[in-house]
Length: 171
Picture 1 (cartoon, rainbow, N blue to C red):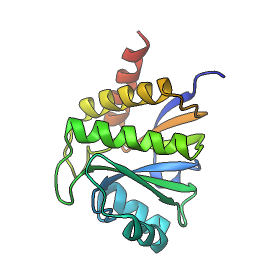
Picture 2: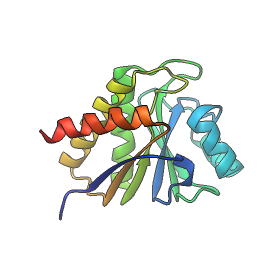
Picture 3: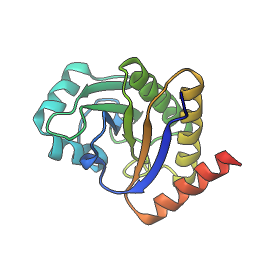
Picture 4: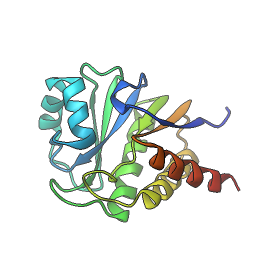
C-alpha cells in the first residue's frame, strides 16, 4: 500500500467530510471554547453527552465519540491540557499518539486535525507542527494505514508553519 496523502489546508475543521476530526480537548472533555466550542455548536448536544459518559480522562490521553451533526462520523478528543490549563510538549505528543492509535484501532481512513493546543492553550505553532509531524511518522511506523491525513489550519500563518515543517520532513 502507498503512503497516505498528507494535506495541509486553511479551512473550517467542523466542515470536513472525513471519518474523524480531532478535537483540541481538555481532560474533562468539556466542549467549551475554541475548536471544542465550534464542534459543540456544529455537532449538536450528542457529542457533549458522549463526552460526559466517557470523561474525564487523563491529560495526554484521547477518547473517541460519534460526530453528532458534523459531516465527520467521529470526533477524537485529544486531551492535551487540563480544563483552563496549558498544553505542553509531552501532553501534546502523548494525546496525539493516543488519537492516532484510536484512529488505527477504529479503522479510520481519513482524519482532519487542527493545530492542537495553539489556540486557547497558547502552545507555539512551530512546536505543534514539529510534534504533529513526529506523531504522524510514529503512527505510520506502528502500522496505521490511513488514506489521508488532513491538517486544517485556521489562518495563513499556521498553514505556512505546517507546510514548512512537513517539507523539512521530506528532506
